[in-house]
Length: 215
Image (cartoon, rainbow, N blue to C red; front, side, top):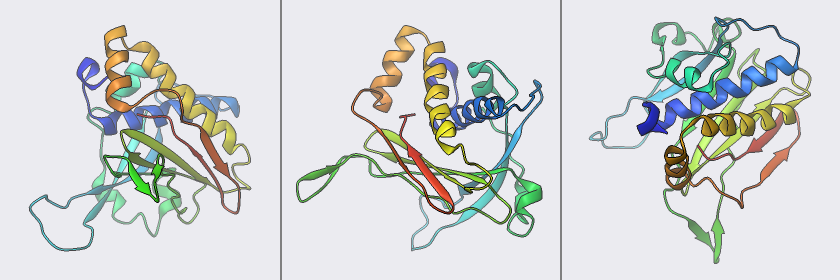
């Protein structure tokens, strides 16, 4: 997918989320134009590989997800490279409700399958805390060649979290379907797309749902 259409794995993740949000909003009766976007706050590591020591060095960026674009490849192109608004995100902690609509965080997990007492660790489902005034947050963690998606929502604001989880799978399938046959085979081999992965959901306050389409 990256070689066929450019961009990075992170770009593919953002394009999948844009497609999922587009489908979910339409199911909710929202009218979208080609210019409609959903603003996401995306924490980005600024720690250099040569830097030693513990701790994280994170900079928050604002990214406009192109939910108004019907073509999945157009959405991918729009987020490659993404429009990052770093200056405004510096005050996101105090004014989250006005600066961004959703939180999206991606984390690298173990590149190989890990075992506990002989049992393989196949998936990691992240749970991202909601900010003040926020209703939806996405977490994406890679694990042994797959990308596991976790959705955290406010029960009252998002009672249809299962529909949003289903929209993630549909968005990924739509993007893969638009790739050529060779690109599809490459994507499936490179990113571990195949049978054997299910969906895990749990509910609470806030509600959480996890689904694991590899990206």
